[in-house]
Length: 252
Image (cartoon, rainbow, N blue to C red; front, side, top):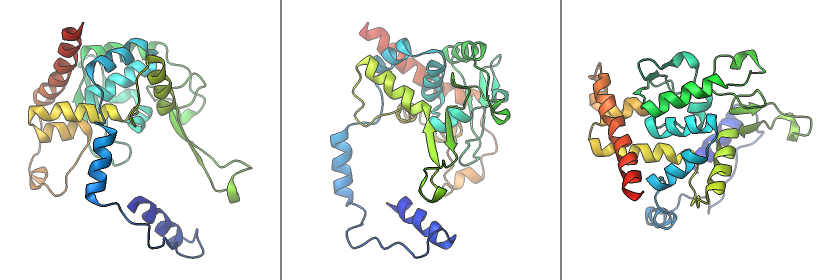
């Protein structure tokens, strides 16, 4: 709700709206109890190993690599869609890529499965239509980046309504349905939740934050930690990999 308020406030202050938005007395944030109850009814926003196994087994080449990036280092839709080839060092198994939305540093060590999937995806990568997309890892079969904003068309209201096309979310949703997995409000971004939930068991918050591109400005430690070694990053991602593989092997 705060995002909605901020959006309309920006529109008014930028001259896009001729008057401030009036939200009325009922436009209030729900009580914390109601929000907790809603989360409990919806269930955890993460995937279990048996579901992950189904998704990886049925995914196409590019989507499989994206899913592994989500599980391996907590990448979301925008992250994988904006991932440049030069951010990858596949020989060393490293990705070093600031988050597109925040420019916060992010670095992770990659699983062997992720490296292999990325190599395969690059081998069959379609040719991009736009020069600005030339350096991206992932391109759709239509030659576009996987998440893009289309300019307003002739039918757009007042010619200003752009459209976000999120092929990552669309294709992942199709994959879930093919696998018979109930979404329960989960989408591709829930892979990021899955990574964080399992990684938290390692109890190395600074390493996890660097992998995910998080930065807590209220944490004084972030102002003093100058370097986090790759061995700490590897310890985190290896724990997540062991959880996933051990659980799958146990159930098979």
